[in-house]
Length: 192
Image (cartoon, rainbow, N blue to C red):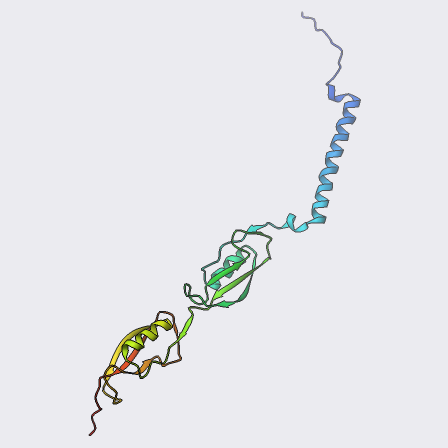
């Protein structure tokens, strides 16, 4: 039979009285810190605890409806800040947003949008009574171009004189669009 040796039980080091008190005090300090931090975070900036910040999406070049939907999905509020003429984008398209895309913002923040009012309209100049060459130069300088040229024998004017424009002088047209001319064939109109 084997003999067992009994050693005095000293126990683990951390079960002794002074170590137990030390560990309890450390635990209380950590718990106090965590609770204090949580309370201060809730007190000083409660929104940052309960809401999540998002990067502002790019809504430029989108139609207004789609831009609003995209902003609403992330909790942002769109506010229209007017319309401005723009030759590059059709009417109703977002051409400016403030703050810019990628900005980190709280949900429910306002994003200002500026929409395109469409291309800049150019008033058709009055070229009646001028020859086609002069009329083409004036129309080109105004930002429109000569479209179809119809001729008529009515009006009793010499050949190549502009009798009318379509659309009429003063009507707004998009820059670069065509203006049709009605010119005289020359000679007097035939009378019965």
